[in-house]
Length: 182
Image 1 (tube, one colour):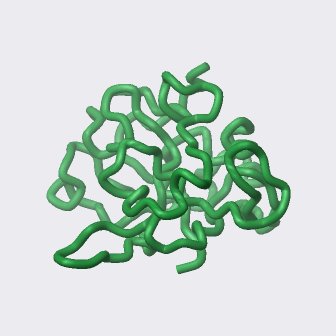
Image 2: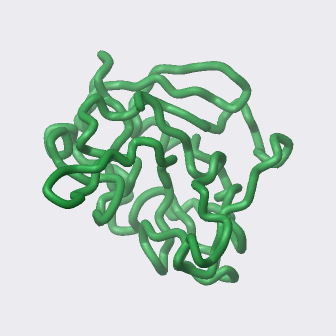
C-alpha cells in the first residue's frame, strides 16, 4: 500500500471486544460527525520503505500496511487505544514527555526499522511518508488528504502541531475527546 488512513476517522475491523482485546471497540464514523472537515486528515502517504509497517512473522516479515494508523497517545495506555477504560479521557497528540516532536523519530532512525506501526513504543504516526522535498529535522514532506477533499504537502510535525488528525478519536467507543496535552 502506498497510502494509509487515519484510524480516528477510518477504523480497523475491531468492532467487538474479542477483536479489540480491550474494553473499547471501533465504530463507523458518519461524515457529519467530523468537526471541521477542512482541517482533518483521513489519509496520507506511507513511508516508502514497507518494512516500517511490517511485523516479524515466522522466518520473515508480514506487511501491515493495510492498517489505518493511530495518530494519538492515551495518557493511561500509550499507543494501545483499545485498552483505555471507556470512561477515561486522555487522548493527546504524542507522548506527554515529548511536547516538542510528538514522538516523531528522525527519518534515518525509522527508515530500516521493522514494525514501527505494531509492537513498538514509537507512535504509529512515524510510518507516514517523508520522501518529498521540504525537510525539517525529522524528514521530508508528504501529501495529506483532508476530509473536504483537498490535498496539502507538509511535514508530519506541522500536521501534529496544527492538530489536523482530529479533535476526537471519532471511530472509537467511549470517551474520545483529544486533549491539547500541552
